[in-house]
Length: 264
Image (tube, rainbow, N blue to C red; front, top):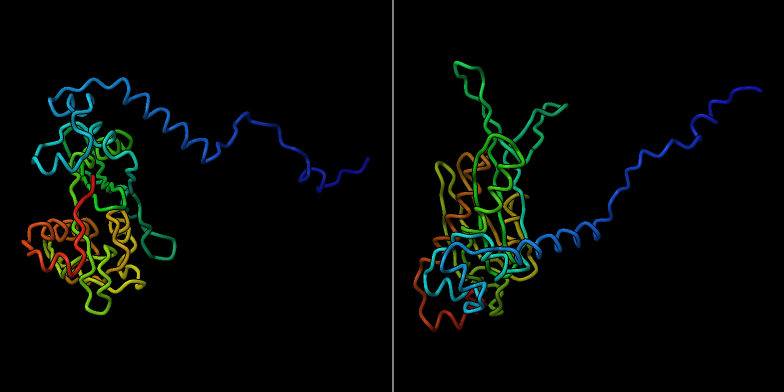
């Protein structure tokens, strides 16, 4: 019997026993695991006990009372629809001479015992409705560092003012920011400009992740400095958001731009 190469190509490979999980099934399993962990959660702070007992039902109450969040489970209970994004802050040389962006930044130091490697990660969380949190941490391995960064990002969550400060639009909705704001980190300076509805986000791909998590749909961004340093660029955007909350606004301007505070 003649041997045909096509028979070898068309032959069925033996099953390895690995079955690829459906994304919906994996998401449902993660939700069940998260719900089980919250039900078994034992609070260690007075704020955590009040949240679990139901005395505090909204994260807006925490911001109004200026309380400090020291447990990430508090945010998981009060903001169940929280989403996260792992920022691409690292890079490796590409085949064509470019740079392939990676979710971790590795640094190496020389010691007497040899080289010691440190992993840096940057994570942003938000509910796409006026809440944003961030964290930049380091560790010895990728998994533990990423988990630590996720927990810390929830502890650093804060509200963002939204509105329509564009003179071209003046619709009074919360699709953009209420006024022009600046932020900086090291040599990077950014300027956030309100944009009319329908323009979308005119920014870098990593910056768009932060804006979407914050619930901003239309915005212009101007930047100068060493923006290739992605960490400083991200921190400059965060600094602009923090400055946005520091400005005092009178009642007439609030009604004209439709300034939206965080909702419970």
